[in-house]
Structure formats: C-alpha cells, structure tokens
Length: 403
Image (cartoon, rainbow, N blue to C red):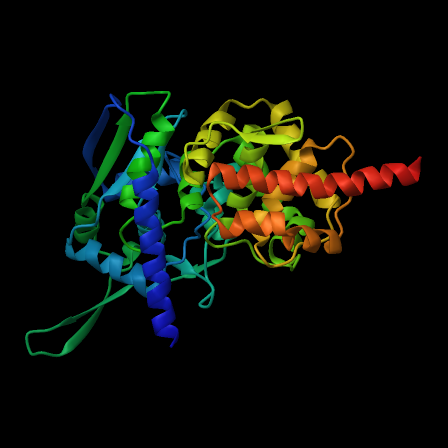
C-alpha cells in the first residue's frame, strides 16, 4: 500500500511539474545561449572550496544515501559519464547550480572521504550556506560528517567477487590523476534580457525539473528569485511559532518539504500588492488568469524592493498573526490569504477569533466562491468582498461598544 502511495505521489509531482512548465510564459525575442564546457573533476572540487559554485535556496534538502554516493563514486572511477550540471552566473560571477545539486555535493563527499554521519533522516540544509560565512567544506562538516571508506565490488576472471578500496585519498597517484582529469559537463545558461532573465531561467529550470523527483512550483521560485524579500519570508517561515501554528495547527511542525508554506506567505504578500479596494469593492490587478504567473510577476517585482518596503510586509504579516486566533483546517490556505488581505486593508483592524473565522468560512457568500472555482478573478474578488463585509460588521460593533 505504501509503495502504491509513493507511486501516486510521484505521479502527482510529475503532473504538477509538467503543468508548471506549461504555465510559465515564453517571452518573444528573448535569446538564450548555452555554453557547454568540460570541467575536470579536480577543478570543480577546488572551485567548490573556493566558493565558485553555489547552490540556490531550494527548500529541498540534500538527501542522497551512502549507497547513492557510493554508486556515483564508482561511476567516476570507472570512467562512466556523469550527467551534465546545468547552471547560470549570478551577480558575483559565481556558478549557481540549476540542476545537479545532489551530484555536486555527493562528488565532494567522495573527494574528502566523508559521508553524512546519520543513517536515518540524514540531510544537508544548504539554504543558508552563503549566509553562514563558512566554506563549502566547513558547512558540510557542521551538518555532521564521518569518515567513509568507498569500495567497489567487481568480478575477477575466475568469477569471484573482489572488493577494492576506491577512497580518493587512498588511490595510487596514477589512478588519482585519471580521476582528477575526468571530464564533467557544465552547461552554463545565459539569457540576453535583463528584464525577463529570471522568468526565462524559471522556464528552463521547470523543463529540467520534469525528470527525477520534480520540485514544486515554489521550490523552483526559491532557486530563481532568491533576494532579500525571500530571505524575509524564509525567516518568518522558519522562526515564527504563530505562523507554524496557523499554517499546520502545530507550532512545532517542520517546514513543508515542498515549500508550500513559503508559497502561502508569498501568495498573501502578492495579493497585498496587487489587490486594490475602493468603496468596499476589491479589484485584483495584474491578474492573467493563473496564480502561478501572478506569483512569478510579484517575485520579479520584489527584486527591487527597498529595506523599508520589505520591513512593511514583514510587519503586516507579523501583526496579522497576532490578530487571529486560529483557522479551521477546512480550506485553510484560501482562508488565510483572504483574511490577511482584507484585514490588512481595514483601518480598524479587528481580532479574528476561531469562532469568527469558522463563521466566515462556512457562510454562504464565502462557500459559493469556493464551489464555483478558486482561481478565477471574479471568484477571488467576491471572496474578498464576502470576508470584508463580515469583518466590517464586527469592527463597527466593537467601535460602537467602545464609544
């Protein structure tokens, strides 16, 4: 049964990856160039230690097992081809790895003769590697490593299995030279448009992502749109106990492996940016019929946000968390976005009790917008209007009592 569930989850993730790749717009007249280079194994390893290669902020952790790393090491030693590493250059001229993060880290673990110390639930969270101030090796060691003897089993002429030590430091100089110069293909992607660079990289990455275990839409954004605004979202997502509670019903719940929690924070902020209100009517501007496109558009906009703008969004999110008790698990994500957008627009910001939240979610006006669809502009605007009307009644009653 578990195997069937895993298969179903894999199929769902693949379907989502195909849909995401299909939804990302292709911009006319944007030229893409790729430069394919054969880099030696030793040059890449030295580059990693020097900080030439960096991994973008994927929520996905490094999770390859000892066995997987060992098989990759055997492929390297035997001279088998290693799949290409896809990358692009950032503003610091570092090589940002688009596809191949698991292989790069695995090759480096082999290079230094180490593996992850833990057998169960072993992972490396590389999201904050750059901010840590540590070298590539120091950061990996901070995650817990142990010495590893890498071995290769092969059949001798008499048919008997033989085991040989292929640990890099234990190799003969002759074999070490062979491995040092083993070619690994680096495909560097260059987009000639500054305006649409991130969007185009997102499209390329989405296409690459359809093989293996696909990344979620937000994991793709984490890699492409990394900036100070995203840093703020990560910090809130990781450290705010109230947010963890609102998102999952458990303040100590782990972060979502597919980055759905970060996406929900991003969605709330993007609606704050694109939603206008006049005479009690809400209008969603800049909407092209796809939430994915809206989130991408906003992710490009926040690249230029000032510190003050970022702080404004942070304060809005935190203040909202303090002004809501809890949210029913029924359509939790939709409710959190709608409540936040409406609450943020209100001059007299009410406290939203669990009872009030349930009342709003179960009201005819609100449920009608869910049953008829969740992503159409009309449904979104009607949902916001319904929430606003109900919160306004409470706000007016409270003001009357206070007077």
